[in-house]
Image (cartoon, rainbow, N blue to C red; front, side, top):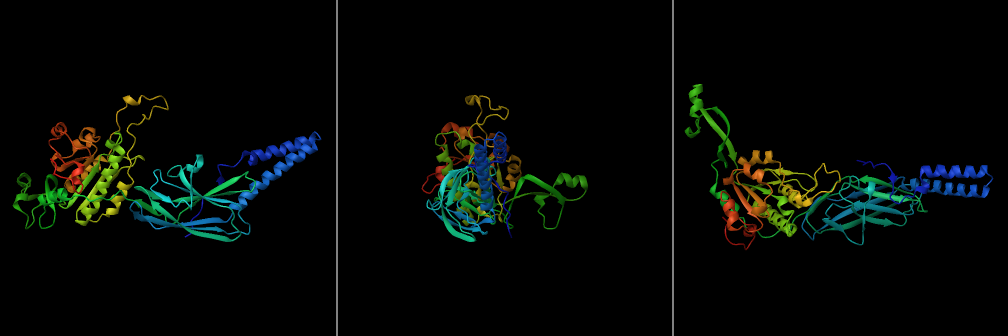
Length: 446
């Protein structure tokens, strides 16, 4: 399938001397000079007009029938691992290209970088950055490309930090040999490869989660029924337990009616990340990295143990939420991709109606962690137990959600080990410091 490129646009270094208005001005000046018998000056203006017109034609001919194909395989990587991208550049015309640039945008937080010998770092500006993940990019220069020549090479990229990098398009830029005009064109990438760099994986302890599962082991079907959530009422069927009979409805309808409750998957654990709690403290960034490292490690270990995991993330720096309840058919890579690409919003944000006016930042309230609360509450009974990871108990930014959850079914996991006052404040919850989930951590929490 052939992928269509976007239309040609002017490059950032195009001069106004060769623009259409400028061409009309040069032509008008030449005509005016001729009227006043200033033939030498008229010749000069005509020469400038001809050079600028030639530059514009040269730029368009350089970009004509110029294509690039980028291929790569979606990969899930650990820090330090490598991935390859293959580039095929074709000049499918009779004219050579004297200079050419290939620009490839990077994600807002670069997680994958090329070998220094292949590309140089640059920044996109103005219209170039529109529709791109960030203004950071890498660039490769070509000094000469012959007629009907094909250049093919493979570039090695290295995973340097957790994150998600989706490659959707690249930019080709060329122009005339005078340096007066530039044209560029965006070329979509056919395969749209996505590179996921996982957080650092470390040894973790899963006894806490497996212990909770053992305490809540299911019946013959492998499920538990949550008697706190009535799903429906139906007529009695053979082999129904008498304990499920709804005596009040039976008396009203003169038929034996039984209760049906939501089913809880015993081998499941639902994790919630109080991301905004990490946005303020001086060590918040390092704490978040450690927290995501433990979370990603738990996903991989619990998946090996046959435990279905779910995850809910609040709005990130791009305003997106993530919610995926525990599901035995779910792909663990979806959860790993979510934690790999998560970065919280700023600690404080100017009000929408500030209109660029001065803002008293000290008086602004901290940014809360905004989950898709309705979805979290709706899936909580079936998820079994929820585990909320936060920076510290006294910095939690999801109080509204916490109040809607059943305290007896929530375990709080703070990065900072809580003191006696904090434990007393959350006495209804089970509390386990994050450090005790790491291999070598001691104790079982409260």
